[in-house]
Image (cartoon, rainbow, N blue to C red; front, top):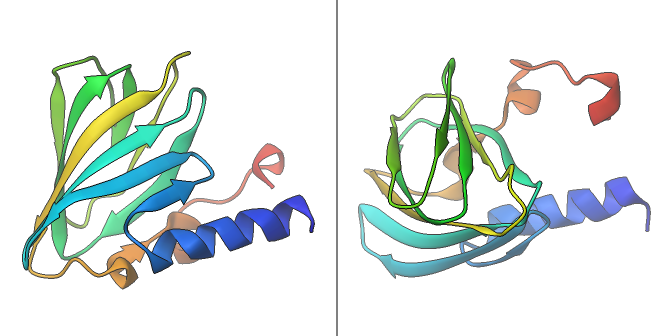
Length: 135
């Protein structure tokens, strides 16, 4: 299996289940209701979640350990333990772990619809053009 096929398989697994291992780390759903989901997200050092947009849910991220590099719209911030940020619906966002230890965040999703098919990535939307080093 090529690296691209492996990444495609991992990405397809990412949308098929809320909890589980990802190429960048792990997600564990702690609690879920009709209009909310609380997850523990662990991101490996020097890894991150691809830029994405959700139209029907907001997210609130609280850093439990490590350092988070968060991009939300045009703003980029660093968050340390016990700090948090809010990601409004319909906003391009991503989170990365620039550090040397695992980043652990609590993610609270809140909205009228929490389905994974409400996740769009900019490469799919042609909002971000891939650079030669990202291919």
